[in-house]
Image 1 (cartoon, helix red, strand yellow):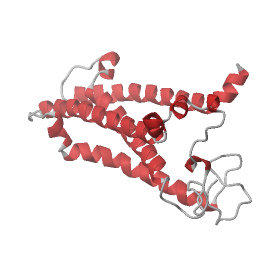
Image 2 (cartoon, one colour; image 1 turned 135 degrees about the vertical axis):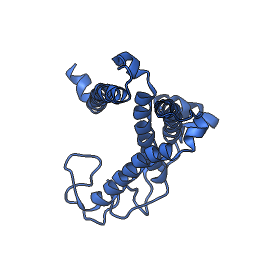
Image 3 (tube, rainbow, N blue to C red; image 1 turned 180 degrees about the vertical axis):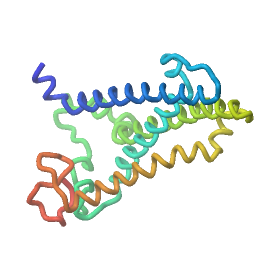
Length: 219
């Protein structure tokens, strides 16, 4: 068990924090949602009903959308964009292992797509960015669906007219929800790129060595 925890600690801690945060979000969201319903002389709903509501679906996926967009663009942009001195950038004038073609030596130790070659290898070479893009599009879709549901609840509560998914996507509400998350994610990446030029964190692969000069690019 100790070996398993050591080998998988980073994932386990972040999955645990994710589940804890999602649980707290659902509880306080349920409380807030029922408070708004009481303000409109509507009956409160049970916790399970709230988890199936547009309000909860929208709140979850509008944040997932921005996170996968952040990570996907970071993976993709670091292929061809550089920042001198940053640990988050590739070195400017030297190749890194991620840029080399897979060798044909000891193929039995390679992942299946590398052994297969052809189109499978081509997809595998870009699979991380593709996966992040697909997760972004999936989250974007569920944000739009949940947001439409929540938006129409508000419309009906105030005597307005419900809209379809495409109608909601064209509203300022949808894009305000997206952009308030996107801007913070892009700022976080820019902060990491800039601060890692001058600041260090001993023991972290996201930092340059403590004694590295500020001009050194890459971790």
